[in-house]
Image 1: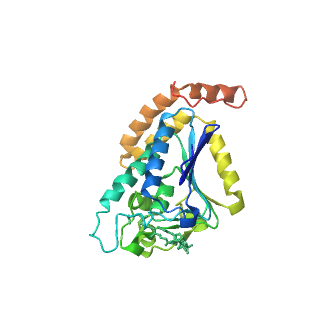
Image 2: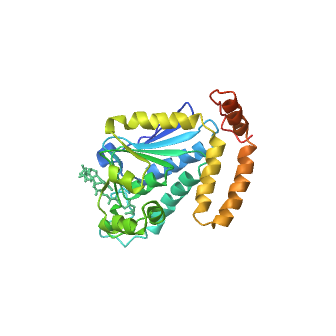
Image 3: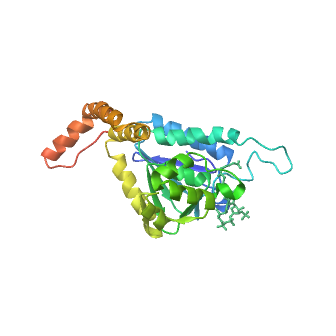
Length: 264
Ligand code: T3D
């Protein structure tokens, strides 16, 4: 299915979502947000979709909220941007809770909500020429869409504050070195590298990945004690899945596993 500003395609277990307003650096409009949420909802409910890849068309990943499609109207009454976040927050929640991996292929600059969206993904690959910019302070805002939560956890408090308050672009290689993203790759290798990861996920133990996501999410607020209990409970579920039996069987038979990705 294709919408004008969000291209959606699905094949071989992979759903690809491409932010598609290259002339505006894929700045996010309300319509794109609606389409993105709907696509993620479809991905969540479709067992044939085993991984989602999010990328941008043209030279940017996304320059964040389209400031021309904002609730802010020059000369108008001061808007309540909480209302804008009512549209963004469900998307971030969906990405984090999606019971399958979400991979960001950051092909160029990711700024503002565009950076937050990328960082919400499970694995972030970025072209070496790409950068991440917490642009919010440039317009008097605070990082949102989860960035004040993600940043200190990913890079530590000092770097999180520097990124937020200075609002300067962080080049992909440094983002990798700081632990903000999984990997910076040569520009001409980004698509192939992300395709390889997506194919691997599309034939992987999807249910196990969903349980991993749950464990990592809960670890953010759990004590070690509580996390050990959670791991025990989730591992019980993982070991009841056909993919566990398949994985062990394949190992012992010295063959490649054929995971269904299903819970039962
Ligand atoms: O306001 C609310 O509703 C609240 C929302 C909060 C969430 C947020 O995301 S806040 C952060 C919003 N994003 C920004 O502040 C970033 C704005 N963009 C930039 O600072 C620069 O464009 C970049 C540093 C990202 C890239 O610079 P450069 O020089 O490579 O490109 P450019 O020439 O600035 O942009 C190219 C075109 O994209 C240009 O359009 P034109 O003049 O050719 O017709 C530019 O206006 C457009 N564009 C870029 N970013 C946005 C945008 N149009 C609308 N909204 C944008 N965010």
